[in-house]
Image (cartoon, rainbow, N blue to C red; front, side, top):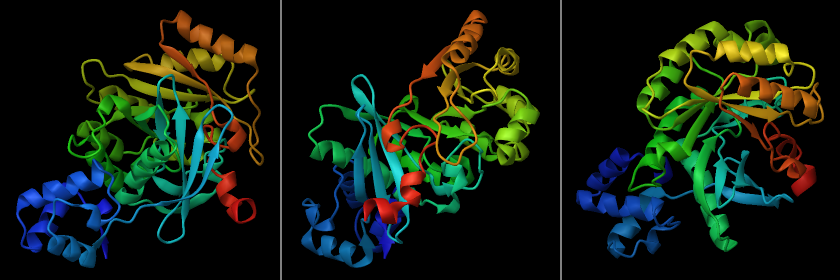
Length: 351
């Protein structure tokens, strides 16, 4: 049976018409799914019993199921979700000052194999469908409600497992529901898609205006990028990537977020800081610096605090907007680049 969580509003409207119902019923069902987070058709009390039964006979409202929830000392929550076919993915609730940000996965695993990322060492299992992406949001909202948490989910970032623009069709479908004021109703300012850069899909995403853009750069020159993220560097060479970014349409106050993971002794020297400043000089951007989170099997160490401070101060001196992102959830492998090990060892650790 077709899962209505995978349906666009146009798809749902077509399905309702096929059942001989008015367009207004599609609006009601849409609201029940996304505004009320309804799990069963029988709960849609403003629909006739006959329509509820016919919907249940032809469609499902299948969501990812929470297999395990882990809470970090800093309040970060990692949800291990099981999909219909048994594939498991991770999504992470990150506590901020007065709200939560949800780190969404777009794929199970990742094909790019960046050498500093645990997820990349898994390889790609498969793309997620739009309903599986959106189901992560519903699961997180339900979790916070069940915990009676005073903070609400306010921001969404596609920074979990996988490269979102290698699954652009399904990510685009999910973003349409995320942005819909009758759907999940998140603004583009509170929704961010992070990408290493995928030709054509990057331009299509920017033209859609559906979310803010973050670019995982991590190296200011092509040779170094080829060393630490070889597949991404081959997919979109740095000079072409930067040229494309400089030509993207941006809103009046919109800036691209440039993400840069500092790897100890690899890309964290003043040389790289100077080259990064030059590389992004043509971009309307802000820079997120992220100190590397060491993990077993990865060939890098954390940067020295002095190197991080020097890197940050140099960019400040060049009038760049720089944020040093504090990694959260390290103790439960939920920090940046760590979404892998618990999932890979699910059998021994969770069952």
